[in-house]
Image (cartoon, rainbow, N blue to C red; front, side, top):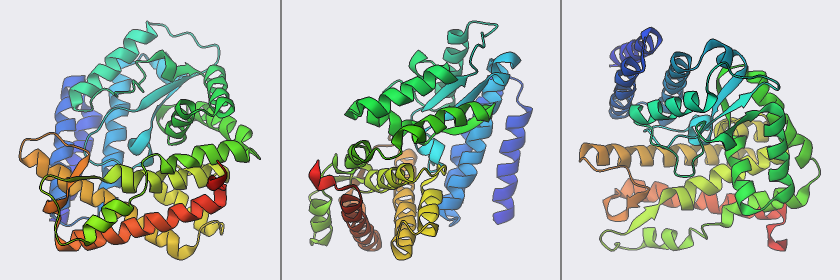
Amino acid sequence: MFGFLSNQSYQINEQIIAAQDVDALKVAAGQITRLIALLHRSGTKVNMIARLVQELNLRLFERAWHLIAPPDLVANSCLFVMGSEGRGEQLLKTDQDNGLVLRDGYECSVDLAEVCQRFSTALADFGYPPCPGNIMVSNPHWRQSVSDFSQMVRLWSVTANPDSLMELAIFLDAHAVCGDTTLLEQVRSAVFDLTSGNDAMLARFASAINFFGSSQGWWNRLLALGDRDGEQLDLKKVGTFPLVHGIRSLALAHHLTEVTTTGRIEALAAAGKLPQKLAADLIDSLHFFMGLKLKVGLQELDTGHAVSGGIQMEKLSSLDRDLLKDTLGVVKLFKLLLHQRFHLEAL
């Protein structure tokens, strides 16, 4: 089975490399979801699936960009992805989150807006829906020169309102797809320049872990004998987001260049900024959340329903209930640590 799955992955990769048009890439994109299902059902660990999916997606996006963008644009820009795709934690296809940094002084040889719109349209055709918040290269806000992008990052940090801090959080997970990666790193360095010693901004940034309230209510329901039919748990709100954003906040405070949540956790633990036991529990919890979301997502795809953000409580197995209770307990403990580290009670 392992040999078969490895061969499937290799074939998709070769198909992406050999593609001469976006129609050929669309075929390869469709096979990625099928491979994910095969990997999951074969018992492959979710972190391994996520790593493989990230590699295939990045190659898919890179090949699409090379087919659509002229060589001078590719050479004088850096295409990047953000969100769970940027962190390498995306499994099933989700909304697009991408941007483009251009070299200062560069002028594209063709209509840049038209090229970027074609790219966003191609990804949508591959099964990656347009971002509801319009965080895509087709939006001029997310395609700017190094200087202009750096200035925008500075404004995010200075204004520090909920909208600007949300955009900062999204950008911090940026991962280069292709082009001149130093352009993206120049913009990223502007973030660290402004956060040094800015405890008030860091506290407001970290406080987003409380946006969705406490998971205590859901935890109590998991301990109950039964749940009301149709009741759903928003796993992202009560588990994934506070974990991922809390780690993102600590990484920003300590100027860590790691982008993946696991990489950030390991770097924080190695630097003595996070207890080793809690770090291990957070990684296990993240992988559990990812695995549970994947399991439910594949079930919904099998039944012909669109993937939703909710977990139907009555459909959880006893084992999943116990594991979910444990992971929510880890998140609760982590949030207490964040409240102490960033003095969130003073906000």
